[in-house]
Length: 338
Ligand code: PEP
Ligand code: MN
Image (cartoon, rainbow, N blue to C red; front, side, top):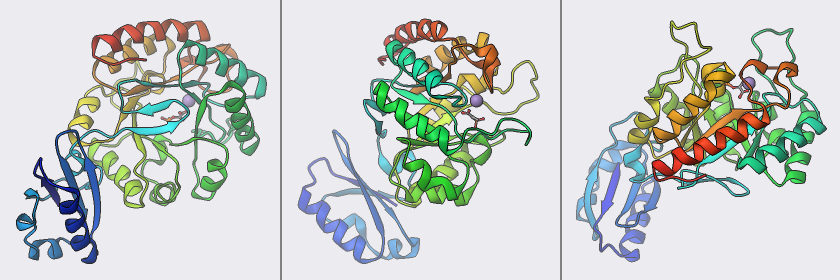
């Protein structure tokens, strides 16, 4: 249920509504916008129906949330969210978030060298996997905790916030000790135990869209995280599986404005996994920013031909720097900045 307050509602009005609804066992979320305050309520619908919320002082109107996802829905909050990711990185503000780095952490020197270069080019987050979800059990599975230690040390040394994938609910605490943000990979988008576990943690979460998931399923997965009390979720469109075989995945540009209409959560795009080919990454990154994405995630490697995973889709450091210049111009054209 959503309570839209009158523009002249007072703090006393808000406190009164919160006292009454919380005493009924309802959870309230207050969003203070520039013009209006909106209170979202979660709890047993039957309780809400017997309380004439419309007559409370300061209330303009009361509406049900029709979407199956409640906390995540745009109406529930009434405005877009800004999510702090660590360091200077914020998703959902005017400035875009740019996450860059190798697919997998391969060692301290390589990561530090990439971190310094992507930061100099304008990235505000360093990415790199220590736990890799590989299709084959015989492929490199990631450096594990040793990789996490490298990520933390490099993030500190280069002065850049970090994001890394967590694949197992048992590793959430471990990863939280080393990184600024969790990544939930596409293959784990509906791993509900994992979603609940990161929902209990007090760190932002990058939730990638499942390989064959609808936008609704994706938003329901985000709801799992918010329902545990963690509101710091950023969505990432990384391409879905279609009948097309020219590209690794089909990056769904439509998802950007659709998510913006349906949810208050920021959304970024990952054209690296979304195309699977380094020669296509720039075009799709530019398209995503033009379509209103709140940022990009780009795989970068000093020497893609020697990368331990996803070399075919990695940009080199100079290619990344070049892309950042292009993205700066596109961002400016749509009222954003890098
Ligand atoms: C990754 O970011 O390296 C990754 C494995 O992504 P996805 O889950 O989107 O495949
Ligand atoms: Mn990868």
